[in-house]
Image: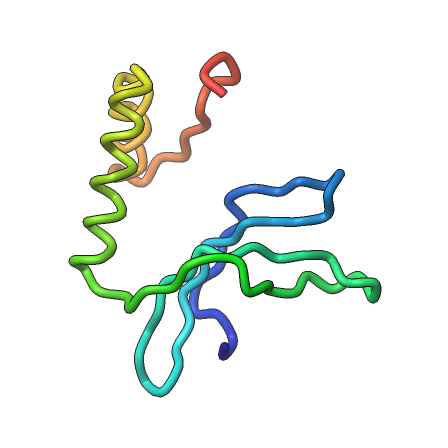
Length: 102
């Protein structure tokens, strides 16, 4: 995997020394979207594992993933928080999810 074009930690478990990361990278001139588990090596370097998924980065794949996440959020009865978050995000405002929702 080449140097990431985009990278974001979406979950960190310090106790078990692993992270889940959302990463966009390029391989053979094709961009890929990865959700991958990283582990902390003995040298203290976060290293990608073979655990995770990769798919070609396309608007269709991103929207399919987003649609699934929206369905999950709606089923969790947090649609008001979800709507507020995206309204502010699309308007360029910073928004934190309230602690009572998490």
